[in-house]
Image 1 (cartoon, one colour):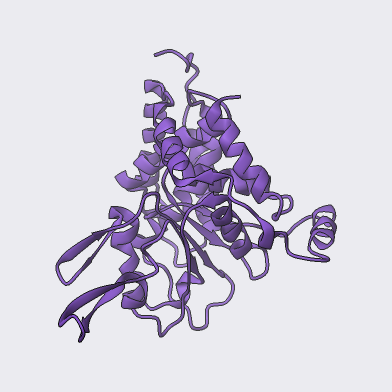
Image 2 (tube, helix red, strand yellow):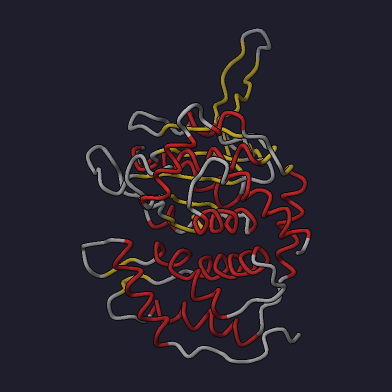
Amino acid sequence: MSELQQKVNSIKVNIEKVIVGKSNVIDLILTALLANGHVLLEDVPGTGKTVLAKSLAKSLKADFKRIQFTPDLLPSDITGINYYNQKQGDFVFREGPVLTNILLADEINRATPRTQSSLLECMEERQITLDGVTHLLQKPFLVIATQNPVETAGTFPLPEAQLDRFLMQLSMGFPTLTEEIALLNRFMNASPLENLLPVCTKEELLSLQEEIKKVYVHPSLMEYIIDLVQRTRNHKDIALGVSPRGSLSFLRAIQAYSALKGFDYAIPEYIQYLAPFVLSHRLVLKTSFQRIEAARELLTGIIDTVPVPTEDFKGR
């Protein structure tokens, strides 16, 4: 087991002290973390979205801030504001919660489009600009946003520009019978989240993020990735396919997931596995009934029609 795999596994084991039976979801969250990407957790209330985000944050020795998104939230409540300090006789910058390492944007779709747009520069360029002055965000910087897909009253759909900045869109899902019994027993006397200790520093995480870039992707797999992306742009049922930013995000996610699984090279199976999580939310369908499930079905059909390379993927 590589040093990277050991460190990532220690984070996963730590999160699993709180979260029961979501091994695949945790793997994908850690993939996004390694790929320096953001995550959108979409599911019904009470499935553990916020607890998962908090468990990840507490597993890292990093700054953590939480914003509860509401319709009256202002952009300055996120980015910060320049205010006049009478004692100093000058304007002073008051930092907003976005100047952190892990930002939990809870119920992000409850904020107005104006407020949501304040995250665009943060998520893509890792900076904020106020009154012509640019403030760089801390490294690493990860946004974990949650939203409820069922309740639509008082919500504002995320625009395509915002969705495209999320590396992945994930769903927790309900636990099985055995998992839910284990959950009740685990939380019967106290919440294990309260006593969770960090197992990874910011410096270690930044090192891991650089390490995954060394994962080799064979030229034929590069063509395979772009072939999948190109098919989304030419599909009869898709109005807007995956952007070049989506292609880059897809590549980085493949490298991160391969490293997480102990490989120093990518394989087609991982590309096919990650595609629905990384690409589906970037698609704009021609039908007015826009659901992530429909997008994933179309993407699965595309994957089934694209020939899979069979070369020796270890070769360099």
